[in-house]
Image 1 (cartoon, rainbow, N blue to C red):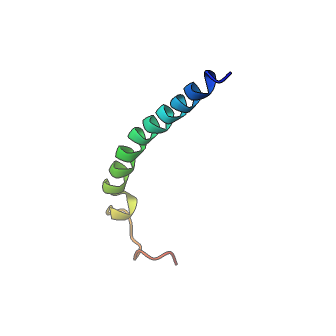
Image 2 (tube, rainbow, N blue to C red):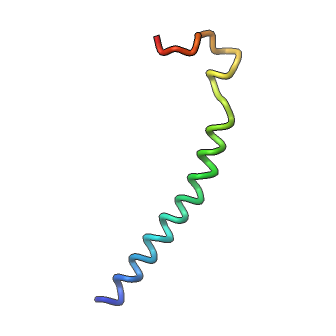
Length: 49
């Protein structure tokens, strides 16, 4: 049973690393691409009310 435990830890670390590699570039892209509030279709003043 002790042989399975380190493998599970390594697998968990690889999954977290993979998710991090996907998440960071996606977050940077979404943060810099702008969106509706930066477009000409938005007619508000930037406040919530």
